[in-house]
Image 1 (cartoon, one colour):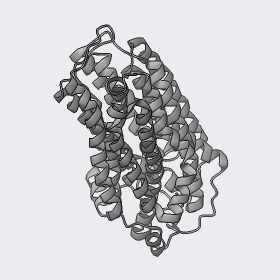
Image 2 (cartoon, rainbow, N blue to C red; image 1 turned 90 degrees about the vertical axis):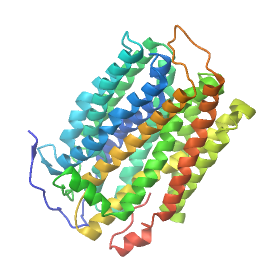
Image 3 (cartoon, rainbow, N blue to C red; image 1 turned 30 degrees about the vertical axis):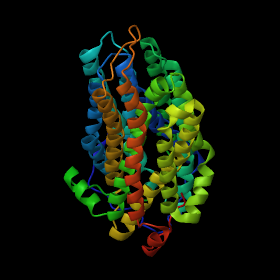
Image 4 (cartoon, rainbow, N blue to C red; image 1 turned 30 degrees about the horizontal axis):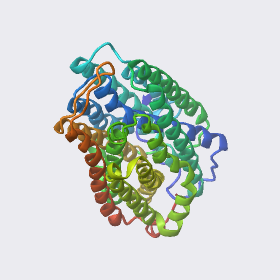
Length: 461
């Protein structure tokens, strides 16, 4: 039985030595849970829009809305889950009951989303919208408490870094496998998408259950404090300038990534004239996540996290601009340009989460409050909404450009305006928004020196 309890005080003061060591099996158990978060972020972002426009014959502008609107619900459900998990007391701990609920429902709703019903057009759009709404809700139950756990496991920042590095290993593997395998299984037929949904749903289930059981012995050195209402959560977040700047920066980056990812199957199909290139393009995006992680850690130590984030954002920006020339220089050139995007994206993935942990710890040091659930709830809500907003904008762009929806039995030749929208809109708009992120990175001032002034040791990347 899970029951809300009065807000508990912290078990240990922020910054105080806890004397608690996170067992290796707990670090691995926590890390394996990121297979779910990475896979769920990757597969719908990569395939959902294309599945609707080119398999279910849903108009592009409606498909964009279907991909986006369920994520708006995250603005409500994610902070609510963060608040409730902050206050939950149970024999499973504060966070894990919510993770278990997500584990039981998310795989089912995910499979249903890609079940490929015998519907097309508006009826198909309504079906996918309902299923995806339920999927977003189930995912919030898992993701919000999952992201809040590292800040409560230990007060030792080197140990926190170890936990996050295990997470990033599994993130890289999950994105690499799901991004390469899911498109290959799905193909361009309804049956392929149906099979892909079942297989990926099984991966989600195994990952979430493994994390639930793997974190059973996770230490809790400090409990977060719950705000009394969602409005109070927003008010609390606004008091943290580092969090608000980091949130704006992350939103710009996630919008760019979401639009680029949604456009990848179209870029492969209509720019490179090779639908199978979706897999190789995606490997160029996520492959560097596994290879370059140690380099990004070293860069964050040498130039601080802000300096490393500037570099990662600049590489992403340069790569997307270069992609716009793929029509002139061909497929090999396009893959090299996307590889630069992938190297920059690897840095963003590591540094965003690490900087969020910095903000949570810094806030606890200067306010005396533990608000991990508040920050991660709002963070995940904004992150998922703007990521889906990238797909919405891309869908609307295709609609304005005259993109013609189709199903596998009746393929169509797209007008030149739609092909140009895929090439230029799907690359230059993400580059423009990434430029905004670069400006916000320069305004982020929570460096290691600032954290040390607050009386705590800064974590490594």
